[in-house]
Length: 456
Ligand code: C2O
Ligand code: CU
Image (cartoon, rainbow, N blue to C red; front, side, top):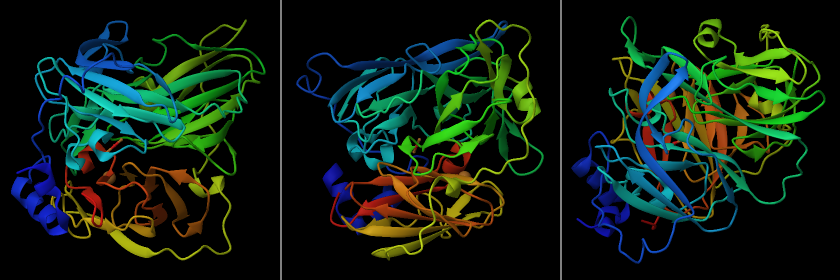
């Protein structure tokens, strides 16, 4: 079956899922790239391979990473300028790299289910060519499914930051510091519903105290670009005595840059925040949960000419609220279409359903090019779900009944037993995967495909 036949129309789509369904849903065969496609040097080369990552002295984990480092290289790219990326795969299994938060075509987005070819194993290469859009903090990560194999996909060190620059950055800061959160040595918790737990935590690939501190000077403004590259966990971070002025969510500037004591980031999310360094000392920028911080979730912030052990102090109680970052609108134009999606757990406690069905049997989400849709995301479960839509950015309309506007994201956490409303403009034709970014939820049915009418 060719790709064209496979994707011709809704009914063929639906039946092909049944035909080829399975752990990965659709998996197509792609011809190798031609010498013409592979001619010339790449702008960026990533190599997937095994590394021994030293999280702290004497504490190492074996994992997969890009270019032998965790996080992978920080990619600084120019918005609107075509980019050629080569990905080599030195592992024994096919892999795929997803460029999270970019508006790029489905065949390079890095998702098998959308039709992107993977990177062949055993030294194989795949070249991706695309034009990065829009500007902001994006990231890249493996989009393999892991299932019960906790040594794959987002459980590994295969993640890195992409900063898409457009030359319009007002530069209201003196120093820029990437912060990437991750966990290590996952295992299944057996009492209660099946869930994943972790032994160690890291910021920028090192446990708290093991890496280089972030060195700052008094009254410096530091831009933290925070990415939660966790497979399954939402995190809250604080820096004692300091406030974060949140300027962007998921890389997109917010209308109201509010100052907060605590930053909340769910898997897949990004927060850009500026901290004015006005409290000299040696501090822990770390996770709020003490056992996680003690297991590595933190990094030392050290002012010039100060010394001593890093200090931590729990912040005042704080509620993270997306709607604080954008004004409520008195009225909002009616969308062209509406859709309600209910999330619910199956009786086994670890499979997930969207409107009563699990991937690959979930109903396709049909849209027409150029129209605006309002999705009501109805969480009928006790878990928060960080849901993500590929290749698009959506506007938050309301969270748990509280309205907002101008807050553009590609991941939104729908709180337990609550609803979130989002508006999506269908302006990126092609398949677009919608899923929970919690890897174990995604691998257990929490996915659906958005599809444009009349577009393969
Ligand atoms: Cu960041 Cu489908 O993922
Ligand atoms: Cu989920």
